[in-house]
Image (cartoon, rainbow, N blue to C red):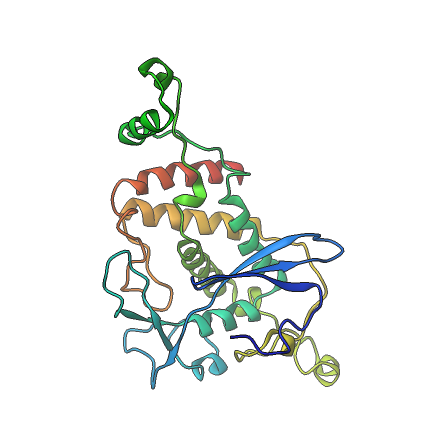
Length: 277
C-alpha cells in the first residue's frame, strides 16, 4: 500500500494499519515526543468535470484551483448499502488552505482546539435512562447506586470536523469579500522576492507537501475570525442549515444534528463564544 520511500522522515513511523481505512502514524520529534496522527486512506476516482452545482464564483477560488479535478469517494454509511459514492472537492479545499496566511490557517487550528473536552466541559444533558439501565445490569448496581451516576457527553462526539471546516471557509470568504483577498491569502511582496522565491506562499496547485514554499513559523491567530466562525455555526444550528462551502445548496448537518443534537452543540458554541469575548 505504501511506497518503499514512505515515510521519508525517520521521525515519522507507521504505528498501526488495520482493515479500516484509518492508518495510525507516530511522530517522534524534539518538540512532540510521541504525537499520534490518524489518517484516513480512501479510494478516489477522478471525475471528468466539476458538478454543475459547485459554487465557482467564490473569491477564494484562484485560476489554478479551477484547473484541479473533482473526485468521487465512497460514502461511508451505517447501513448495508456500500455502493454509494459522493463528490468531493477536497483538492480545492487543500489548495485554499495552502494559500492562506499563517495567522488565518492558525485560526482554524485554534478553532479545532476549542472544540475539545480539554477546553469545553463535559455536559450531562439527561435522557440517558436506557444507557444507565444497561450500565446498571452490566455492573450489577442497585437503584440507589444508579441515582448518583451521570452520563456525560463530550463536544468531540457531537461536532464533526467537516462542520467546523465548512463554517471556517465561509468565515474566511466573508473576510476576503470585506477586506480583500490579500487579507486572507499570501501574496508576493515585491519583485526581489519574486526572483529569490518563486512564491511568497505555496504552490497553489495541489501536490506533495514538500513542493510547498514554507514560511517561517508563526503563532499569530485571528481571534475575530475565530469568533465569526462560531457565529456562523451558531446561526446555522438555529436555522438547521449549514451549507457546504463549494456546494451551498447542500446541508452538511447530519441526521443527529437535525434532531436533538443541534441543541446540545448550540450550548457548546455559546460557551465558546463566551470564551472569545
